[in-house]
Length: 358
View 1 (cartoon, helix red, strand yellow):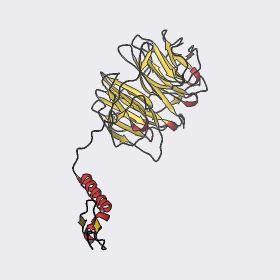
View 2: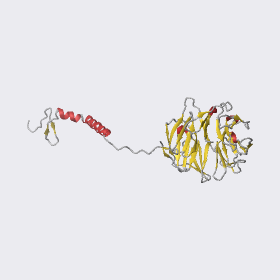
View 3: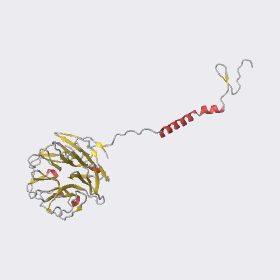
View 4: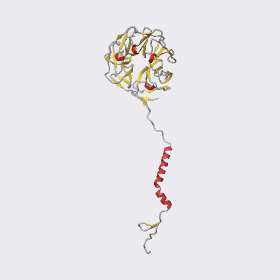
């Protein structure tokens, strides 16, 4: 055929004139299957990576922020501070500014705590919803359950004592219990005089009796250590939410719409205090300088420097509700309410630092 290149089937001509044999069946299949082969290699590499050992990532410890928890009660024992609140949380700190760490409560019921009190040495008690009573003997670090009854679901609303060696836990629908062994065991007390009134506060006047205060103007007296109660004449129709005894032995009780009453004779007679604003009052304490401090709804803080005769408004209007406060030895206060814990120094309120959750 002379110098004519062969054009037989199956032969190809390169540009430089050299001839090349066609790709065989295996070579062609490899060329056509390279995408599938690449996918298989990628899957194998991913599998090797997934099952290969890797270091555990470092997570930031979860913190329970003091301004994100409803706080209902404070207690102090030396430097140790305890705060109790919603969903079964108890916070402890050795500095008001924090950190506030969460204490260990066993078992964790999730029931809201309403009040806390030291009852001797490092022993501290807390009460709450569902008839819950817990006790700590190590200064609030760990807590053990003493009583719990979710079937009745009746909340305890307060703690009082020890008065003549007895502790009192009280709350909704006339519930009242007495302990004579620092809260290890409790005996219920039922009295027809109290009925189903909610009980919010109790004091131990200078005459040795006991006075309790509750809803619908309830005031009752016991002269036998809390076993029997006599209802006293009503002095107003609203509920009493708290009561305190001043260093002068003057008694103060307070409640709805800014109503405050004082007694100089262990509760035999009462006079109404002057309060400049209408706000329900839930907590009271004696400041380091001797002033009486009451707190309540609508950012209310009232001060009295004349043993509770007159009060002045110490904070402006606002949406925050205060349910409790604790006066500190240096003149500062801890405020508790629906915005958690606030540390008041002068006219400034700051949020303490958070600690670790349990």
